[in-house]
Image 1 (spheres, helix red, strand yellow):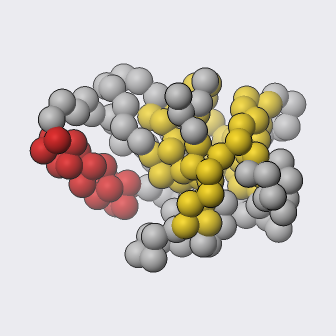
Image 2 (cartoon, rainbow, N blue to C red):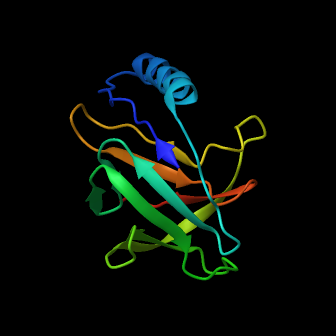
Length: 138
């Protein structure tokens, strides 16, 4: 799957935040190109066209594997690896979230906000059609 990431924006007021969120949603809805292969053990290959962030780590443009540590998903742990599985970039507990009814089923990530020229944080990895895994940032 290939994910086009819009440039982040700096938000200073509530009104600006709402306008920015709406613009981000529209941008993602219109520029995100997703071609995913989700396997039965909830493994997804994601390709990003620019740097992204996860809790405690930045990932350069490229393809990464997102998967549940326990395929049944009982503990909520997610692992992010290099495409060849040689490097583990992140293993972290996540919170389960329900997919909004109107969200397209082919959307596999949701992004947070970032300052200009900073990697865009991935807030949720949609691990299947109905459930996502929300990353915990501190």
